[in-house]
Image (cartoon, rainbow over all chains, first blue to last red; front, side):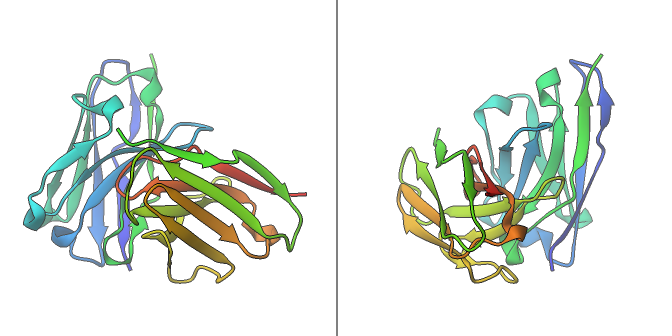
Length: 117
Length: 104
């Protein structure tokens, strides 16, 4: 059973940065394609991006609204996925989830990022 | 960019009714379509992946169909516990806007 645990959320001022982590367990992260998804308060789900496994090139695709500001990376030796958030805007306030369709799939519980002055 | 369009955005039906939600992709996505259920205050749960593969533990009253650009989620007999918002997603891609399902 896939287990994912996000951390690193919090309160940040507009223009600031934050790095989110997603600790993976109960499956081999190095063979998984991983996604980040967010949900603003009272809104729908928004896909942020996806990183392929190293064996499949390790490349990353981003949704247009975050391209150039957000960066997805992975450290398979630590079983951890990352999301670097830069140049944060008030509209980036959301719960951020890491997810995968690999190995039966799963979502973490999410971590809340609040962008406010 | 691919866009996913769901309809309807809101649906009210009676217990036992057959419910259908549709999802249209702006370009062909083969079978790379997933359906999610999100109950209020909860993490989304995947119901179906690759258009029609029911995930483990999901009741058999849920089914998915379609390919290319047009997809359907069907609940064969609506139950009270199915009150939720349902989303389609191009797998590892954009989501539809969601369909809120309520009991009449």
